[in-house]
Length: 49
Image (cartoon, rainbow, N blue to C red; front, side, top):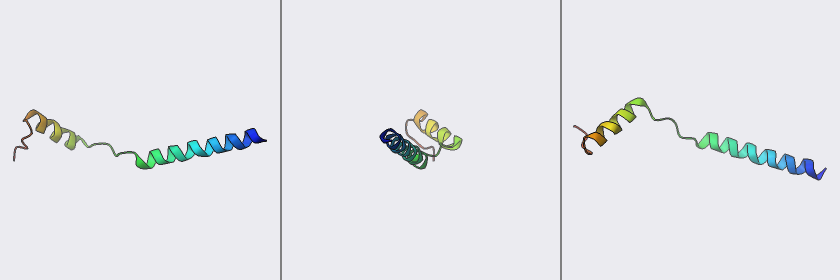
């Protein structure tokens, strides 16, 4: 019986960790942001404006 309680607690712990990971996950960087960043790096930090 104690084993089932321990398994249930571990299951809940893992589920909470998975949910918090999904909530805190960063949204992917857009293609335009990546292009702008690479352009700035190649130009030595100048934004071209």
